[in-house]
Amino acid sequence: MQAATTAMLANGFRPATSEAGHHQLLIQALPRTAGIPADRVRVLDGYRAARNQSDYRGVPVSDAVAKECAADAAALLQQVRAWLAAHRPELC
Amino acid sequence: MPAKRSPAAGNLADLLFGAYRRDALALLLLHPEAALHVREIGRVTGKAPGTLLRELDRLAHAGILLRKSVGNQVQFQANSACPIYEELRSILKKTAGVADVLRAALEPLGARVRSAFVYGSIARGDERAGSDLDVMVIGDVDFADVVLALAPAGETLRREVNPNVYPPDEFAAKVAAGEPFLGRVMADRKIFLIGGEDDLGQLAAHRKAQAARADQARDRTPARRGGTRARGRSRR
Image 1 (tube, each protein chain N blue to C red):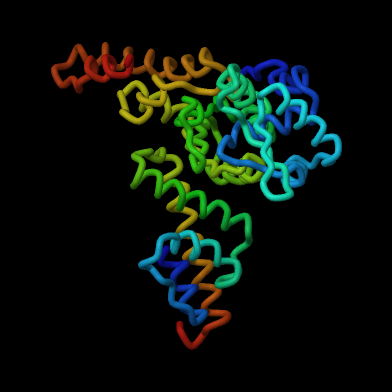
Image 2 (cartoon, rainbow over the protein chains, first blue to last red):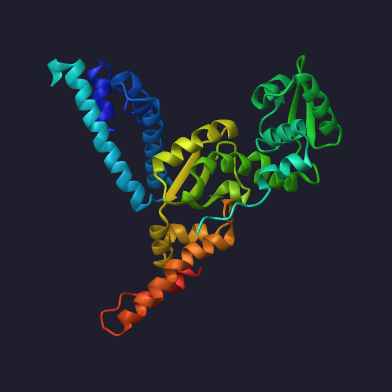
């Protein structure tokens, strides 16, 4: 979420974090804010939904999915860093 | 051992209903809150409005659908007062409406999926308009593969699909340890997509046998960690 927020801020937009749905919005904006491919975004949005289910409906995620999510989050962080270095060098 | 695919489940709906009737019934009976115009139904199901209207009129005449005029439009909606309303909904859910679509979506993942089923409100039959589709997938597959495989199905079914993915070992270990969420899911109603109750039982019991053996080994030493309690709870 922080990587997606950074990408949004680096593009000059501040997300309205007091409004419902800003997690989903930040993730779905990633193709525009950091050039992330659409299929990746679908998967990241799946993690977002799973987090929501876990926090608000008591549906836990498996250890395997948690591990996969952490790896994908690390990859996203790198991708956003790379995007910033290439497109917003003044912010790095 | 690859999971058994339920034979012919993919075309049970085709056998029982014609394509127009199947699609119209699946759309309207599984979204009972929606009153739709024939062109909307045609757009969602990809069927020609002329033939569709004849089919809808016939279903309305039989009392399965309600037909109402709104302005100069005719809208169709599921008739919850129809004597076989619940039974039809249940048949559609297990065939054309939900299960076929999800089963087809998971098909490309092949034998890596050992068991898959719908649980939660839709499996129980007490879903509401915005209810999500909860899908449990047990197998050696990544969450990413499952999300991408199920994404188009969510669009077809007009519901958000929430997959829960467990590798077989972790699933069996948690069931054996009496993990409360999986305990609830195991006891609750399910619509099986891949494999059946037996396959799922085998997946869960596989580890139970291992855990029992481990318990026996531990029994010989004083440091035993609540094996009896865990086994008692998992039977719920």
